[in-house]
Image (cartoon, rainbow, N blue to C red; front, side):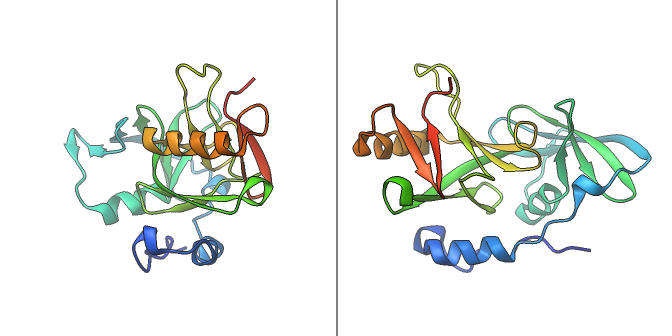
Length: 194
């Protein structure tokens, strides 16, 4: 069995981007995309819009359990979510997104910028070509999201908390590169999807 990501060695605010990159490189997740078990069912679980996990109506209060379940979470081509192992695939209800981006670190400027996000499961994700940011089509009603894993466009995403979104906007506007956009890990992300 593949073990989940190592715990953060120290507070995210004190973590350098080099240390974050090392943690990202060390991460090994179960190969859920390759598992297609015949046994299917319902997990009686849900992830609410605020990021809290529930089972049979009761909140799961053990962060270690949530982290473990999050490693076997997959989004299906039809948009549904499942918890999958080699033996079974169980549907899980997701109100909004599977994850929430709750902290962000920025290093560099312009094209050299790197943004690393801490998710509500303590996972780290560096925005870039493999983990794009998108902000929605309406600048008056932004829908900021970060691709976490799975196929781009139909994989698991994290909702970017409002305060982080405003921080991204401020970084983009400070660089005044014409149309507001933010760079991370060599990729440019427009603040309004066209």
